[in-house]
Image: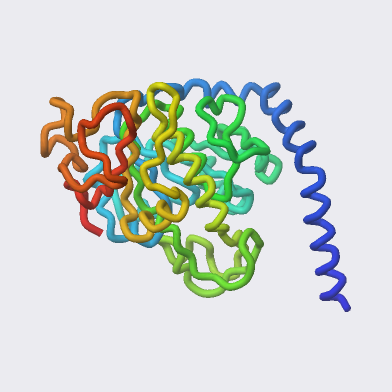
Length: 319
């Protein structure tokens, strides 16, 4: 009976959160604007315009990815990326955290880090006051639309990678190169629920990423693909405002791309030439600068549209 009562309370609690969600997000946005924290995000506009930038996930593939070869290039790390530092000299330029559980568990590390760290505004009340004061914040809206000006809010998502991609876009980066977003998790049960972890964490690059006995939020890969498709469309938008996703049906194709080739490059159409066609990007100048097969049937130098290439076909480190 106790278990049944807990289940009923859990369902009721989720229903209450769902009903009040629009109001909560609206109030949170007002508080965010009033707080002035948005200025930290506003200051990042075009800080890396026309520069290559890495978006680094937390998948097991990072174990075999020599990120040291990309030191010197700006990078956005996510969540508990600092657990990787024991095995590499590479460091991200920024860290973003969307998940409440991660923010709660890792708050001391975030607060003590010298790397600019941006935590979801909604998670602030979960943090100790001394940690809360040391962090920067971003607001996640009650919408999953890709936002090109996230000063007052990013499009929400089932994955923090979506936040990182919007931030990279806001920074003006070109190209954006994705590492460690393996898009594959081993777990039982429903998506988007909280579970207690048992044993070593096989879903991330570190066995204690979510330590045994701690809580983690199960991923929703289907919903993540919806947001990846939106990101792909945004990065593929032509200079005339048209949209040309290069992977056909987009979400399924993007998932297949991530699973098979977890190093992806997004080149923005309105910020210059594709990497291999610019005189400033001669072969060997940059780690990803090798001509290779063009996904989506586009050929290099064919005009103002986005190029999406598997970095494994360039001079990128092999997995």
